[in-house]
Image 1: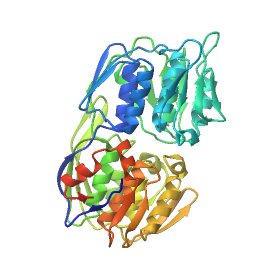
Image 2 (image 1 turned 90 degrees about the vertical axis):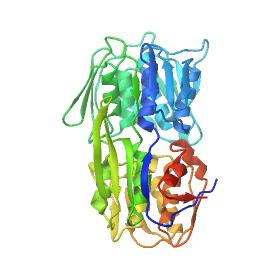
Image 3 (image 1 turned 30 degrees about the vertical axis):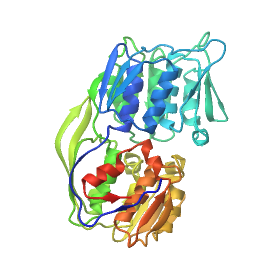
Length: 435
């Protein structure tokens, strides 16, 4: 599918976002590990969450999805269904989140299975979860640190808690280890070198897990003493999806938009800080909490944009927003620089290389570095670009058409169905046309 966006004037209006992707993933998996029936409203129905639901099907978990309401019958924190004779193979499609979070759940519960995925997922490194899982005593094997990953029986295996320092701050790795540690007697202590998303700690704590967070990015996980309680929640809108609508408005003079009920967990609001630093007016309204998660309405009013420098903890707090930031930086005056973001090379695509190649096609002055890039803002000529099988890259490149001198056509844009199926529809509500 090809996608092209254009707008004749400023963006205006109010929009609601799809359910948060990270929370949808966690809610479905954690509900599986709980006792009783969970009801999860505003659940994201997209490619990445369907990968998890399909995997749960393979384990025999019963769930029903009506519109955006997921009802799921919990199995409890114990081994999921195993096949007699050989391990059950669970396809995770192209979703690294599905594989990494499931890895923690099956390791902790002692489920015998093989986690596998698409050709692209098989290229994504998994040693960051495998090494600490082995230290916990989980019998796990892999293809040289890549999927497929095989989990063996716990029969005769002694597991013990660990004190482990993650080499990089990573919510997926941390979540995997938390889920595994719930099944290991004693206290496991995890330390990160910086902040990462804490959705897992917040949600599991609301379900009854004994998880303590301390200053210095330390998480203490105690083995489960009682069953996890089922979930009955309405998920907030996805901030990573909101970033595209906010960027679209920020690059169109005189725009003013309001996004309703968006998750604003401080571990993920880096892009909001960057928008403000670039000159946009960003305001949080109606702030409250849902299941321990901060939620607010976001108002953005466009102002002249200028370049910024991004490094340090801010990188982790906006790790999924760099494609849209790069596109927006092209519309800003001056130079923007990103440092310390080498993790971008291990996403759905090598996002540093892909961004530089594709934005250059459109006329951007962008230079690649090992751990980031620099962009000199200025008019884009327009042209054609490729999505590289990366949903966030597809949407970011399409947004550049809102300020390019000529049309921008993105090929392979159907991949955006992975995380934001209503991307074009949401933009149309604010005054953007698509074809």
